[in-house]
Each structure stands twice: as structure tokens, then as C-alpha cells.
Length: 274
Image 1: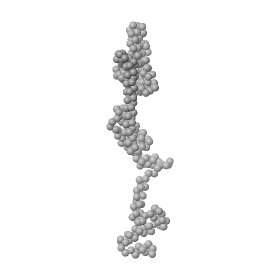
Image 2: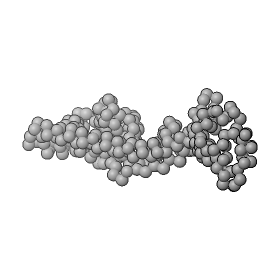
Image 3: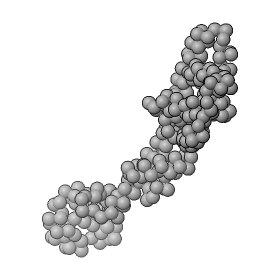
Image 4: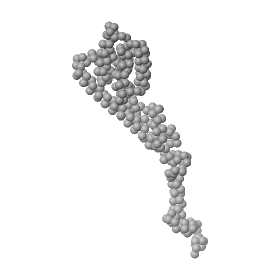
């Protein structure tokens, strides 16, 4: 008998359901019945569950855009990977303990978001990277400060050995030179660094000697035009220093020493000492 005749011979509803469970493939054409994706299921329940699961997986699958993909398709692909729709989609959190020079600011956070969004980082990647980025910056600053402190200590020890009992007097003269040339606040930043003290001491001696010559009349006072030009150039360099710009403000700049000497020279001209 065929499938229909077999089904007619079933006399109860339960028997009919059982019959259909085991003979469900006969509802498909022969080619479909022989397809491994269909024949692997033993009952209609298994087939339905397998089909629904496959549909769900397809809905969650990610199709990599090709060269013909639209901007919208590319954006949708990125979002499925976990990239936020906009830069503001990243929720960044800074670590509690950071060096004062590595504290997170709105500007730093904005720049970081723009960078990671440009490079398609997912939310999870960016949010994990941000604190590591700040901690690395903090650690670098601490290492630089430790190295600078070690350098200053070595310079101070060497200078004390060189000057002996004259150390305190020479430092006082250097401090006076720093204050004269750079002002009280800025001068203190130089005198706090032993590596600059010897140079400032030499400058202080030169100031003292030149002032004596001016007082005695053997050295003319500075020309008004020269003084005005020096003051203008010096003011420009001081403004840059306050903003943290230029070689004078950056000790790592190859021209830092040259800039420092330039400031000293301008200060002397402003004071009419050359």
C-alpha cells in the first residue's frame, strides 16, 4: 500500500500522530527526502527543531561586506561585531590611582574615543584598553621623574664636592641670578635643579661684575632700541614657556640648552648689561 492507504488504516489519533512522525519525509519530493540536510532527521519533531535552530543562527550570523557593500551595510557589520554606532557609545572609566600628569581629562577621553572608533575597536576592546593606556602613561611619567631625581641628586653631590665650603654661598648667588633673569616663580624652577646651578652661578658672577662696571661708568647702559627689542623677544619666549611650548620649556629638546642661553642673553640686554 502507499502512504495514503497506510494512513487510512490507522484507527486512532495517537496512532496517526506516531505514523506521521516516522513517515513525515514523504511530504517532500524524492530529491528533498534524499538530501542529507533532511534525511538526517528521524522524526518530524527533530526536523522542525533543527530548522528553527538554523533560522536563528542565520539571523545572528555576520556576513563580511565585500567591495560592493554600501556604507550602511559596512556600519551594520561593525555594529554586529560590537563597534558602537558613534564615538559616544564607548563608556570609558579611568583607574583611581594615576600620576597627576596622567589624569584623564575630557580632551584626552574625546581623543581616545575618536582614535579607537576610527580603527573599529569594539566596546569591549576600547573599554579594556583605556585604563591600560592611562596606567602606561602614568608609569612612564613616574619613571621619568625618578630618573630626573637620580640625575639631580648625582649633580648636587658632584657640585658639593667641587665647591666644598663655598657651596651655600654659590647656590645663593645662582638663586639671585635665576630670580633676576626669570622672576621669582620661574627662577625657582631652575634653582631647584642642581644641573642648572653651576651655570646660574657663573651668570650671577657675570651680573655682579657687569653691574660694578656700569656703576663705575666703564660700561655704558644699554641702548634703548636694543633693550626694547630684547624685551619683546624675551616676552614672546616667556609666553611660550608658560604654555609649555618651545625648546626652552622642553628639557628633552636638543635645542633646550641653546634656548636657555638665549634667554640669559636677552635678560642681560634688558638689564642693560651688554
